[in-house]
Length: 89
Image (cartoon, rainbow, N blue to C red; front, top):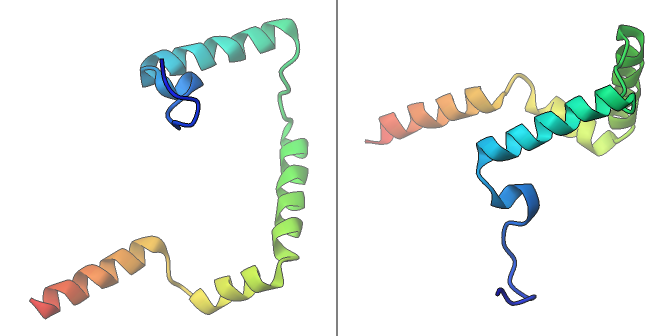
């Protein structure tokens, strides 16, 4: 038996990933069968996307950080770091 203070994987995180995936899949199927699952229409999805965009754009500090980043993506940053490492060696 584990101590209560010890943190570790619990629930679906503690079992085999494939088995957890199967359990989640069955749960989704059951929700649809019972009529409790929601299926977004394209219009609902569009509205949700707009709402999320409005919410994030209100955070001026976050938007400024994005703007300062310019055309840098994580992929470009990794490539740039890789090039610098090659030049150093």
